[in-house]
Image (cartoon, rainbow, N blue to C red; front, side, top):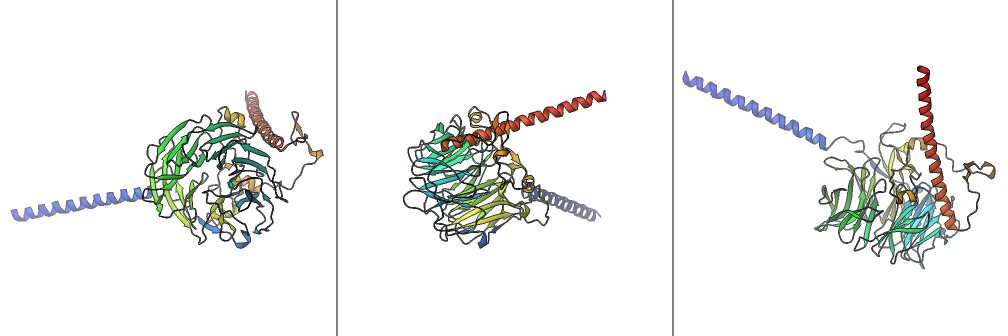
Amino acid sequence: MCVIYSLCLSLHYFSSRRSFGAQKEQIFMTKVKMSWHSMYKSSKFRHVYGKAGSREQCYEGIPITHSVHDNHFCAVNPKFLAVVTESAGGGAFLVIPLHKPGRIDPHHPKVCGHQGSVMDIRWSPFMDNIIASSSEDCTVRIWQIPDGGLRRNMTEALMILIGHSRRVGLIEWHPTCSGILLSAGYDCKILIWNLEEGVAVKMIDSHPDVILCMSFNTDGSLLATSCKDKKLRIIDPRSGKVLQEADCKSTRVNRVVFLGNLKRVLTTGVSRWNTRQIALWDQEDLSAPITEEEIDGLSGVLFPFYDADTHMLYLAGKGDGNIRYYEVSPEKPFLQFLMEFRSPAPQKGLGVMPKRGMDVSECEIFRFYKLVTLKGLVEPISMIVPRRSETYQEDIFPMTAGTESALSAAEWLSGIDRGPQLISLKEAYKRPNPAGLRASKRDRRTVKGIDLLENITPNTDKELLKMVFKQQDEIRKLKDELGEKDERIRQLELELKNLRNT
C-alpha cells in the first residue's frame, strides 16, 4: 500500500510540474506575440507601391549633364521641371513647363548665364518662378522664369551672389523664410545670404574639408552638415556655433537629413567593410547612433528623402534602379522596411515634387523625377497608397507646408523662429485655379497706402526681386493683422453675449 501511495504522489507531482511548465510556455509565447505586434505594428503605408509614368508622361531628348559631382541635377515644382544639361562654353540648365511632357526640342531655350558648369539647382519653396543655381564659376545666381516658360535663352540673372573663392557645390533654401539662402563651396565655407539685400550676412567656417551635404530642421533653427572629414555636425546657423559633433571614424558619412519634428537625424554612408549603411541619430546627443542598418554592397551614393507628413523615408542610390522605402517611428524598431520599387534603368539623380503638387485624387503621397542619362530621359515615379475610396483621404494627407513665408529675413536674423505656414491639400484641390486670371489697372487695390500690384516700375532686376520679397512681407503682416482683428471680434462678441445673458 505504501508503494502504491508513493507512486500516486510522484505521478501527481510530475503532472502538476508539466501543467505549470505548459502555463509558463503559454505566457512566454503570449509575451513574444505581444512584443512582435508592438514592433511590427500595422501601418497604412505597408502596401504603398511605385508607379512609373507612361511614355506620354516622360520628358525625352534631354542632354543630361555627365558631371560626376554627387548631386541630383534636377529640381521640380508644380509649374516647372529644371534639369542641368551638358553644354560647352559655360553651364546651362533646361526649364520645361511641367504640363508639356514628350520629346524636347534640341534647340529648346536654356538658362545659360554661368561661366562654369552648373553644380546645383533649387526652386524657391515660396515662389514657383524663382530658381537658384550654383556653379564652378564660384557664384550663386537667382533667376526668374516667365509663367509660360522660356522663349529664348536666358543669360541675365535677377541677382548674382559673389562670395566664395572656389566652386559652389550646394545651395539650400531656408524652409520658412523666403529671403534666406545658404550656399556651400569647395572653399569649405557656408555663406548665408539675405536675398532682400543681396548680401552675405554670415559665414560658417567650422569645416576643415569639403562639405558634402546640409539640411535644415523644420523651422530652420538648426543646420545639419556632413563633411569629408567623416564628421556629422549640428550647427546654429545664425551664430555658426557647432552644437553637436559626431566623429564617425568607422564610417564615411555622405548624406544627412533631419527627420521632421522627431528630433532625429538620419545619415547615409559607407561602413568600414565598404557596405552602404544608414544610421539614425538623436539630434541632441551625437555620441553614438540610435541604430544602424547595412543596406547592400554597391558603391553609389545613397540619397535619403524624408516625407514629414507621412513619416516615410525613401532611399535611392546613384546608379541604382531601385528605391527602398521605410516608415520612421520614434520608438523601436525606429525604421521599418516597407517595400522596394524596382526598375532596370539606373538613375543619375532624382527631383522631388513638393507635397502641394501631388495628385490627391489618386492617393499619390510622393513623386520622383528620375534622370536616366543613357536615354536622355526624365521619368516620373509616383508612390501611391492603394485605396478604392474616391473621397479625400485626410489620414494620409495632413496639413502640409504652403507657399507663404512665415517670417522675413530680418526677423529670422534677429533670432525669431517660426514653423512653416500650413495648408490643407483638400482646400487647394477644390479651389479653382486662378492661374489664368490677370489683374488690369482698373483692378488695382490699395491697402493702407500699399499698392499690391506695385505701380512703380523697377529699374533693375535686383530692385524687382527686392520688390517681390517686400510684397510677400507686407502681405504676411496684413494677414497677421487680420487674424488679430478676427480674434478681437470673437472676444467682443463673447463679451456682448455675456452682457445680454446677465
